[in-house]
Image 1 (tube, one colour):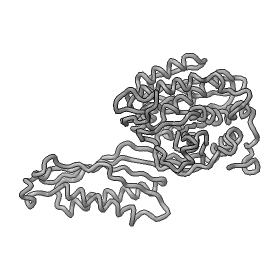
Image 2 (cartoon, one colour):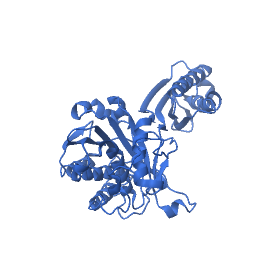
Image 3 (tube, one colour):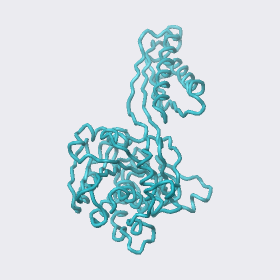
Length: 416
């Protein structure tokens, strides 16, 4: 945790008195509708790229504030620009797509869409940012500058941020000087975790199509068996991490899909591998990808395959690498508002496309996490459902914590 001696920004900001839990003059008073919105959103999830109703509901809420709203950016993306005189320009982002997960929480407001659920907490992210919008709109005397709320679709496919960028995001909003984002995670509800440097992994999906030679199952000698070839590649891929990645570096090569054939008596023509790869170091990533391609092509040669394998990269997610200066400034605000509940974050092996936005603008950023687990459950030693689980159910107080954390981040720059 930072201290005033370590960080010259660490003086207690005036807005902290209104954001602390239990504050007498709390800026969260009257925001009960935010939790109601979150429950509605949770009950009506929409998958990546199909968030039409969710986007419409967000835009309807934003229309109640004094801001410039732009919709339909990169699909269903939305921005709201709050102008309040001279000062910095700060962007805060939330995502709002759901996952193809069947909900098993038993909540009274559980998903009403079969096989679709807000299993990663994007409903909490969106509701928290709407709550921040309400605070910024109602308390303009407490801040100066320009606040941009960005609501992003299609995060789960790592396509939404780039789609908004490609659709002219830079021409639709003022250029931010800093970008902020947050994500809920298992952890004591109301605890905020932050750190400088790499905090989420870079990731890619690699789809490998292998071309063998089909034959009857009774005559394997007449085939070039792509299933056998794929199995050899799977084994060799694990050797890359075990024997080519230094012990003090992090790398993941997960074979999420291996598919080949449809009958028991036919050796198929092709096999497909789908890999999920993650890293904290882009140089290490590039070296591993060269090794993956070397292994795939080498095993093809060893099996006598005449056609080259097809290797396709997709679902790219950049490394989330927090700026030290932004961390120091925002962490001071977290410390002032959350006190002992402002904690150091550990690296998370998940990936995000949030950083595509600040990278596009060439500005620094900070991405932090907020705990949402019931404290009795967290301390019980019982298994705690994590993100992407059908049992993922943020505890009461999660949205409130998200609003406070978002306000801390933005007001660390815009507060007067």
